[in-house]
Length: 572
Image (cartoon, rainbow, N blue to C red; front, side):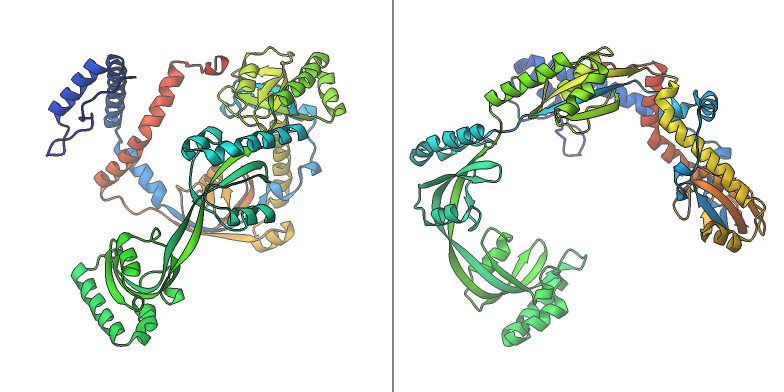
């Protein structure tokens, strides 16, 4: 793609901060002349984005909140209740204590199969067997041998950057200080004794073979300093901070023995205060330039002020030295299976695919060979991952195209082959009973627990006695707003909260069935919301909240109204 030569960009602004129309016009004329295809792409994108932006803005500006909504929202946020309660959680007992027979399950299914919350999304279920491809001893030796062959070329290379990028596993080139002890004992000693230009290796480090070339031997200057930071980032006037720094510098110069005490009293650098303000040995690359100059360009014993973006530093140079640094270039080859090994594993996977085309034999055949067998009950059409696999996109593409009962050829997934069998296809809409059996069984058991708990808790008004009987505790809520979604203690119970606010002060009500448990509530006090006096301010706040949700809600509404079906998974 050609690129325009004009330095003007679509974001150019004039002196007033507004878009510069002339600059924009010149830019697009330049693009149209030099890159007509790119110009057409930009034109379409900008026009489409502006239409969408204007449409969203129009919808946001049309959001209106009437007085009744304002009062209702205000009341929900400001009505408060203080109460005590005892909760018997559904997860306080194992599900195994309750049975859910087929009749119970069918009854629940008939009552709830068309509930929105249980609407079935399009998905597919499949099994797969993994054939891992791992490096053999021959692969490991071949990679070592290839790197050994390249060793001489590395030593004689006139362009180390080109050699490294051509031979490195990640195509990267860098010169880095060698940290003693990085390699094994033998190769570590060889690297530390090597002359400039010498290459050590190949040697194995974990799952890699490596060559290390000594690029240069350098002297690295280091300094050790004590400092006091007076920050200018706290809003204090800079001249005031500077004046205090000068005063501290004068004190320290008269008596350096007071420097550490001054650090404790005045320094605002949390990284060094506990160490008496000392920064141990560091090189010229670590600190900001002004601090570096004060540390390296002054003599040992000197105390000066350095002004940086952090503030004013009183810097005392405690020591300076130089150390030898050995800088190296490392070429790495990852130990991995080579093409011949992939070919051999492919043959094994293909044989399995041909001989295990039935549902029963697919699993038993895998188990007989000690292979990893996995079941994916639900792969949605918008899902781009498969549990247990990396880069499974080719497998996902096959699953979304296959017919029920078919077995795939070996599919390469990372450094493995996978053979898959499609078991079922779920369509959008009402679920089949078998597809929701697990979910509905849990709901039936929850219903039975609720019935049992409510029978135990019925007519009980002494919360302490009830808590003791249930092995629970009496919980408290103080000044809880009606608009919250959860009761203290981690109970997300919107419907129960509505029932609680209907309990008169001084009374005990229950049992109340919720999503997480059953409750008995004793109301201490109900505080109605204060009278709303500033309707307009509340209206603006509520409108802003609703406008903030408008764009996402609008997109969902348009998609549903147009009955958009996402079939991208069938094609890529």
